[in-house]
Image (cartoon, rainbow, N blue to C red; front, side, top):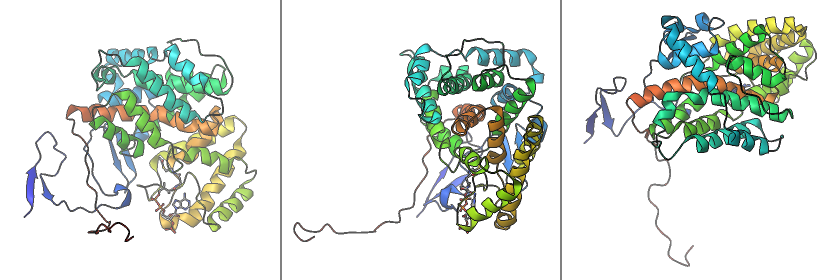
Length: 400
Ligand code: ACO
């Protein structure tokens, strides 16, 4: 006989009753599973609608700086609703860029050829060792409240960029935005406001996107009530592979060697004919165009033009056109990483640094969701379906 369990009203998103043994339509990769409820963002893959705290992404993109979007996602309040509260939030973020020397020294002790995502993972771990003290609760509740980790990750990425380019450590100052400071670390010059806007735009668009692998991983770790530094290391690890955050790096490897749109079309046809995958195409949720791409495609056109790199945009369009001609019938479209990677490149990042830059944007949504989950924490514990042998006997000694 099945037994029934009624979940408490603390979990209004949950089904009223779970039947044991649970039956559900779960596809590979947890397709179709609703793991939690959220007020942070709304994503409808069938229409392409995406909204942060009820505001459509098309309204936020280009309008909000990253720090404003982070405030919206984490607190649920638009910055204009309470300017003082927002200013305090922003000041706290900017002050948090001041990294403990030990963490910077650890990153700088690594060989410059080490992949920057490995440096970032090591840097966040080092930060955790420095920030968590004997007085802190295991859950790091104070650190979740203080939100320093967002700017700490941005500052670490800046230091990693400087280290890889053999430039000295950054002198701390609080006046500028996270995007401004990060761009200066990438190029070692004073960034213009147009480029700062582009980095803000990229981070705003990467800030939250439902329960993708890094965010879901963070939610699982948060459900154990682990502190933010464990959490971010886990989230960053899930962001790394070529199927997700590593795709941007591969986009540059595939696109930058191309010289003309004609060559681009031939190369795409060649990759697909040989059964290869095009980085920056396909998505686990979208089988229609990703809404964020429209914004980034326009941004790439503008940024390429102002840098006299219009050919880069033409080549990107040729890659997209040829890929869509072949892949759109299968429901595969260009994803955010394609145009984002080319924009990061124009802003001065090389391929390996791209997942780190993606990670900075994602810090906002990840923290927003963990804050929400910690209101009513519950240890994640999904089920698996056993598909191995049912019963096997133990062979007697010597009878194998
Ligand atoms: N290039 C060529 N063919 C592709 C691509 C691609 N980028 N993506 C999927 N396909 C094909 C597969 O070969 C497969 O074809 P088949 O049915 O003839 O065998 C079919 O489309 C379905 O592929 P799946 O791997 O089952 O699709 P899934 O939805 O599981 O994968 C994924 C999604 C992993 C993103 C995939 O599209 C991919 O590898 N893309 C390239 C990497 C990439 O850009 N990742 C970023 C994702 S978006 C993000 O991170 C925000």
